[in-house]
Amino acid sequence: MDVYEAVDSRRAVRAFSDRPVPREVLERVLAGAARAPSSGNLQPWRVYVVSGEPLAELKRRATARALAGDPGDEREYPMYPADLAAPYRDRFAAAAAQRYAALGIERHDPDRPVKIAAMNSGAFGAPVVLFCYLDRTMGPGQWADAGMYLQTVMLLLRAEGLHSCPQVMWTMYHRTVRRLTGAADGLVLLCGVAVGFERAGAPQVRTDRADMTETVTFVGS
Image (cartoon, rainbow, N blue to C red):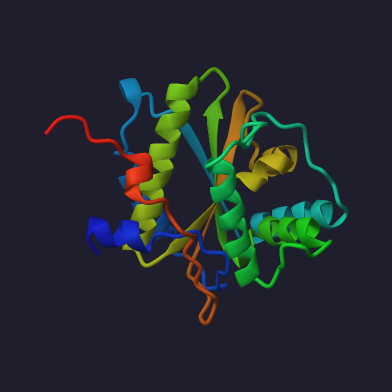
């Protein structure tokens, strides 16, 4: 699989099979992703790979909180700006409608928030979740580095025939995740990434992207 194919086929899959992901494949992907760029070569990410019974227990705890309507732990960083203006607000709304309609959750369903939270807390059935942390002393530059690292991970997963779904949702239950992973208090949870093989027959949703003219400006010849 070449790089363009990996980028084009990468999408946030929300329906995984229970087929196990070999540890040697995960080790190969994560070793390769270590070549991702980071300013000053700080490599600020710290990843916990959770599977098997520990992941099953984490899913049970998080799902119980979601179904109980638990609003989650205090936020350690905002998921989105408080006042999300156009065109970002419009893109967000359109993508959410596409994603969850495909999963059978209609926009005006009164139980929509709880249903979405429960699906997320089950990691959409994924047998592996990677939890990416950063040291609390790190700044915006290192958060950007972690984003490049995670994108590299997700593209290498595609090269291995695997899919993924980045989930900022896990930050809502960061205390539950920390207790299970044993992550030090000096680390802040950036996100989780669900990993696995896509479930056969699952709806394949690709959210729309803005035209390049909306996001790119060429200066010079």
